[in-house]
Length: 426
Ligand SMILES: NC(=O)C1=CN([C@@H]2O[C@H](COP(=O)(O)OP(=O)(O)OC[C@H]3O[C@@H](n4cnc5c(N)ncnc54)[C@H](OP(=O)(O)O)[C@@H]3O)[C@@H](O)[C@H]2O)C=CC1
Image (spheres, rainbow, N blue to C red):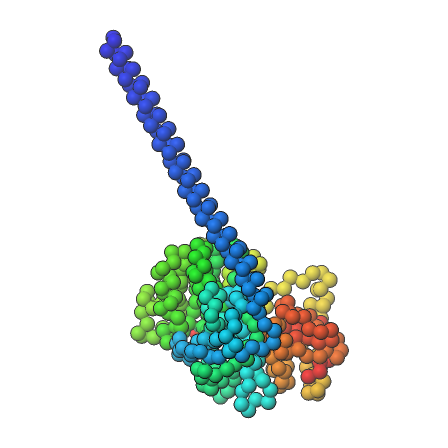
């Protein structure tokens, strides 16, 4: 009996110990989880605090070091990155420090090109991060004639950069500018999308994410035709290898025989929203896009259809066919929109031309060019002010917010559209 009781006692104590053991293990596991969570929170807090400090310091340095008007820069180095794509490393000729910029911003150049009656203004994205700032870098593709118009001249300023400007030459440059830049105040997962030389601002963002040690989940989808056009290949593959939070996906639309899938590139075809759906699963990312206009249009629309809110889609467009987001007119704007659909008269007074504008014609600058009226332009994004044109009659509205609003009675023709009949001094 005693033996039985003793046996039962041992069993009870054993069970109690086992239970205590389970309880202890559970407690230890909970504590370990808690400690890991606290560690992760502390890391996140540290990263955010560092990012905020860096942003405040950058803002201070920018105010102190930025310049107005033109500043002289020496082309220190020219580096070919792929067929027809060249990087230009620019050192300030005055040897003074450079202001930081936001990853995604661009420089505006005022070029004195022989045989051109006026200085030519062009904007090129900075292609490196703003972390080690002893020089700026822009990467420029020598623009060939359009594929469907081989007889047209190649890009004026990109040819000048590639063929005429040499190491040691001096160029006039305005301070970094632009509204398209990476939001560094958040840790939200981000998707960068680049096409062709449109990879330049994305590279600036990607380098910043890596150089600042941000642990932010980052995807970079970019498309080129083949290995011959694959600029920064080794650099991007190295980033993909060395940063577990960063995933780089290269797509070739026309791979050559020697291009190896899985080695040189990851996917065949265009960068597409379908590919992103496969690889990302869900659309809860911040998206940044820069590339050829048809790519920007199709991807922007695809992302909206996938449920990405408009506020999470950021894009850069230099060039005539900017992305036109789906309009959501207020009732009061319906009549105006309808009138615009029916056509609005635009008169270029000095050229003696009257033409009808419809929404598909794009900005007034695009309309002018399509009708043989020559207007000056620079950034084609409403920032540099080169395209300012006097409005003699009527009123305009803008496709995107002007960087610097023009004087009363003038408009930025590169992003302006007529509200009603307008007469322009052009
Ligand atoms: N900061 C900025 O705003 C900058 C903007 N850019 C812009 O980037 C553009 C890049 O030009 P470029 O290098 O000549 O580009 P490419 O014409 O070489 O095109 C690059 C890649 O994009 C592909 N592509 C074409 N259409 C689509 C589409 N609908 N969807 C997905 N992919 C597509 C092309 O495929 P395919 O073989 O079918 O042609 C090609 O693989 C320029 O138009 C310029 O305006 C460039 C630099 C800076």
